[in-house]
Image 1 (tube, protein in one colour):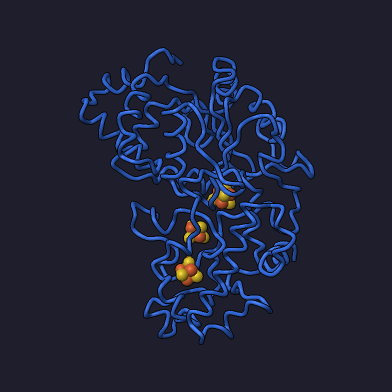
Image 2: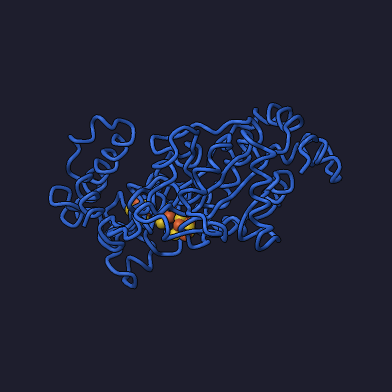
Length: 365
Ligand code: SF4
Ligand code: SF4
Ligand code: F3S
């Protein structure tokens, strides 16, 4: 693989005009949630950026994360990124098979030692590493080896970021996250089950442009995409504030588009960009389709006390406070606020017993 050409040169070779290039930069800025004033800086950085090698490893996963990525939508910004990033190894997407796959991996790691971006989807079984092997090599050994030469690691999906579904109670394989094993490399968690495709490509664009990972939250997620919770951006929020809740999936409230909190929506404690970026070319997202958010971008979401159980607790009981409308909003606002603070200040965690216990009790049960 030749990495001597800059991105600007590669794009020109592909017939991309200056105007097209600036459009690419503007789209990249918007993907990274940066202001339009950043476009000239992005253009200058991209013009001179060298094509980075990307190695993608899949461990205990369902291929949903890769499926999500392949559904990245037009205007082919993602395609452009993948045309200019060298995706040197990806079990599902690469053409090679058999020994050729292992050769491609080792060649890419050797040629780009210290410079490649390592993408991982899936959790790693440490209960018995033999639970998941590729070419006879355990996921644990493959990750440890590939991480050594990586400039940075991106954990794609909740499995790689936090253990995900394989980590769910009773976690029979001893599944852990990438960050539980690798401690000496920058790691960014692009969580979601699966993550939103443009969030994956947005993070890659950031690395390509600036050569470093974006600003992250306390759980190691890019703030640009995970800085706000679903609830704060949800179009059903006015119903929530008025105490108008669907009680079943086919009642009048559901037909009128009322808030899905009582049907188990975890939007108040979930940080992701679904409510603003949506899915499938901006077509819709779970809540818009009539189903509550499952909290799929959060640690332990599978054990969060049941998909259809509401977040209410003995002390914050939405069923009792719903009639009070705004009081209900305030009550759960407190719950969400408590979880916000939890993320911002771990030291305060022990004191926020009400809703945190509620969630963690569910996670352990
Ligand atoms: Fe599959 Fe979800 Fe894990 Fe991605 S995060 S591999 S979609 S289970
Ligand atoms: Fe939207 Fe769910 Fe919040 Fe209701 S609880 S406003 S449906 S995110
Ligand atoms: Fe996941 Fe909730 Fe979005 S379930 S896809 S974070 S709306």
